[in-house]
Length: 496
Image: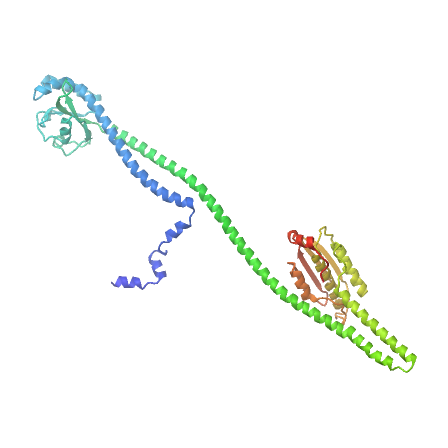
């Protein structure tokens, strides 16, 4: 009771330790994880070994019995041919005559004969020995052995010598001979007049039986192995097919999970980019509104005020002077409006290749700022869709504006490469000569964050590094032909 209580209070890890460190049923789990071919080999191997063992025992037993019976029948037939001349005498007399015994002694004393048949007794039905190669047994009576009883019925009985039988203990038998009881028939071939007990040397028979058993076992084992191999070959092909399909399913599942993770990441990036792009558009709208309010709107408001002054002018000269001021103010307002519009509108880049788009962006910047831009372009022989060319144009516009604003266009340079399936565009400068950024220089733009959202919407990356000694703006766009094909086929007017 104490033992059961202690066992019930053991924790699962403690029970696992008591069982040798393994959970119950671990082997079933382990076996179930193996391949179908392995499971078949183990299961069918055990069944075939058991079946082959039973079949081998039955076959070897039957073959051994047949071998023993065949040897006994051959020996009995041989003895019948020797003893048949004495059958008439055995039928009428109690014992053989001396001359008959001498004849038999002479036959059985032959060395070759005696090496095979060391002992021979002739029995009457009542258990009396009428002749024996051991002369001391002649005339003695013993309890009839079971083999004698069976032989009296006409059967040839064979077995190994019973060393405890009375007729054998008197001769101190130590070797289990092959003991054969064979009926001796009269000349008419029907009446059994005596029974010959033949003691045959068992060594050759045992060797023969061993060889027969060995060959039987080899045949059974070979046949079982052949059956197992044939079945294993069939199952192995099916198992390999299942394993290949399972591995493919696992690979597809892993690939699907990986793609799902990528889609999830891209979806998150797309949502974030949408939020940031919306915010960037709002900031751009506020910037445009502020530029219109602080620039053209102020000038137009000033011009409106001058109209009242012109109306109140008392002389023509004063009115003309006021009108000149109004015209000059409206011209300035119109110039600022056009400058803002140029910063927002793109040139017609739909029919331009990448090199021409880069050249157009650089020439417009040089015209607006009166500066010179160095160019290093490796020609890209690839038809790009309009959205990507628009992105490149906006990138150059923003990068050159930053170089103009923060470095006073000192050492500004544009580089373009096509590296390992991606478009690499770089704008850098050498920083302001005095180490300070000149204030108030701007020609419009969408800002780094807005540009970053535009680049990331194409699956690209944007990096910006600002230092007093020089700034670097780098854009990398992957150019996947499958992704670009729908854009190329349906590209419309250039996006803002």
